[in-house]
Image (cartoon, rainbow, N blue to C red; front, side):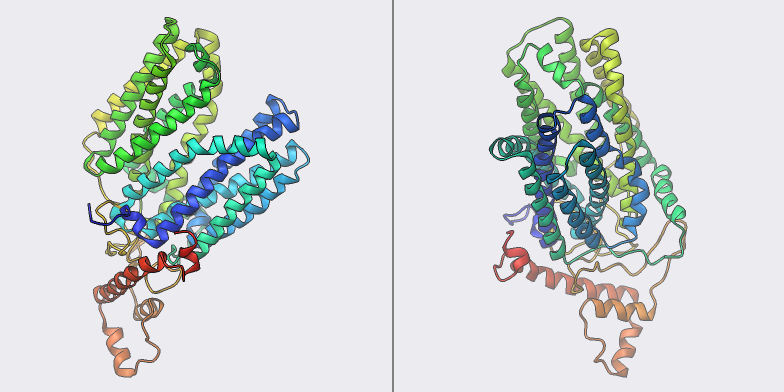
Length: 521
């Protein structure tokens, strides 16, 4: 560890902005979820069908995410974040005046689609906001924050609904989207849109599928996550039945959620300390093994009608939360480590949407199994399936070592000056360059299925100009020297400049003279 007081990725200004936006947005999502449920059931007196309609509207866009990802990869991530947050703010305000459940479902459908697009842009922005070797530390920080929000969000949402009204909470959530707009506008780095405009949409779409199914690790990870999340949702969807079956009151459902969240925070902190030394799939197998054992114990207690003190069950669920961090942190780390930045949107969408589709089917199957053989037996079968999954993952993939994410080009530099603490962070190279709102890309860009494109003399001049070098005032002799620079020499110049400016940007990020940094930090 370095002597810095701030965790590695948070030393970078752009990641601080992205982190702030993610936390505020996550809190707003929980507020919105509570308010929407109250609005549908209490204000509009809707039934199970109305609730199902709203839930379906929020999940259907997941099916379209891989197809929207191509459009995201074609645009600058910063612009996508600004546009999606701005439109989502307007749609959320629309919920304030929505006259009924059908209007609300329509607004939620469109907003969820935009949220999926913004989420892809956020993953791309993460890669260009921190150095390549830091993706795991950045992931740990975000996961810890989101688990903390999971504890605070529902409680705060319930309090605001009680003090105000569901519609007032929607207005508050709209403000969280505006915070996202402000932070996105303040970003200095962004992904570069694809210059290969001659590629057909379907060909670009196919690049994402080819990358995932052509990579043994990504293909294996997708299969593992599909199996794992399907089994998890079998019992997770029955949580409202599990709590009373263990002899606890319905109020303990909320306590269980909080216990899982606290465990997730603790587990994420542990992962941040040790993850760099652990093999990712072995870590995931260990987490699944612990979760499987816990589910088997709960299922056995229900079948045998064993009664244990509620505090003991809360400790067990806390342990389950700790174990879950090994999956929630490892999954994005492996995806980023196996994916170049220019394919991040398409790969991330595919890796998330396929398990999500199976999650929709799990509750229906769980209900059928419970009706056929009972709740306890469902948990015993789910636990056994998790234990089998853990063994398979450990045997087949346990020897895969931890690797840092690739840059978007062959030779990218590895530090933006932001993540000098020894924890890892992610991104292209070099970052925080003098070019405002532009990622300083490496000199060659390689796309799947295409040959390597060498940098031209004009590209060299353009790159230096974008980075802030004064090339227009150079005389003919100086222009000739600039044009004669090799690829490596150009990258050295850009890297040195980015590091010098990054050292200054950290001071600026804490200065009240800079509105984009001072108000937030």
